[in-house]
Amino acid sequence: MREKLYEVFKGFTGRIVLGKSHCGRPIDAFILGNQNDELTVMAGGFHGSEWLTILILIKFLNDLLKEGSESATCIIPCVNPDGTEIAISGANSSGKYKDLVEKISPNKTECWQANARGVDINHNFDANWENLRKMEIENNITGPAATRFGGKSPESELETKAICDFCRKFNVKKVFAFHSQGEVIYWNYGNKTPHESENLAKKLSDASGYELDFPEGLAVGGGFKDWFIEKFQRPGFTIEIGKGKNPLPLDSAEKIYNKIKKMLWHCID
Image 1 (cartoon, rainbow, N blue to C red):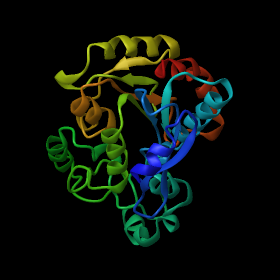
Image 2: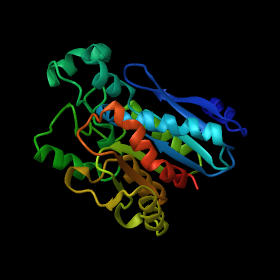
Image 3: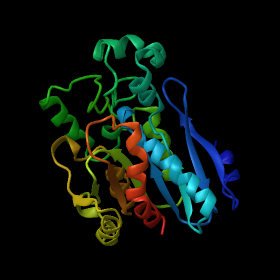
């Protein structure tokens, strides 16, 4: 795996597979730039029903390829491919986990957020995980669920481990996790948040019209940007695209993209 990762960092664009989901689906990453540069990571598709984030990142990747960029960038369109398939196609797409998915969400999976094992990837990162788990239990989330179950331990899921391993192996300078919805930007996590994070967050807000905000309750901890800030003490951001009810409608993608396109370019400055 490591040799394959290095192969694509030679000044050209490449596709690599960071790992596979529990159903065996690849977790793809598309990389532009050189291995010696600091890398910006932009990732989406953490939650199954938030599949519009995948389309937005693929569209931005296409623009990067057409317009070019001097920045080393890694785009991971879909961290949770199993959850995405479940939300779009139903329990039949979850392989050996079909019975579990049907038990949790009988005949209704369009709002499914977790992976095929019923673990919410954005609750599975090792950032205040123990306290978040306590809050889940207090809210009667005690086992596999369509959303907000953080698993039995941090990084218990293949999808979580794949993106963490990538960040541990390479010189990642900042990360952006894309979710929907709310048109807000989260940039802060505890006392390890870098000083420059707030200035960049304000720049992103000015470019998009999205508000800066602070998560509360079950949205605090356990997420990708939280983990990255805590472990690396470098900037991490969660960007909630669009407004409405998940899944956001397909025909809203173009409007959302046009509103945040300038912000996306600022992400890789």
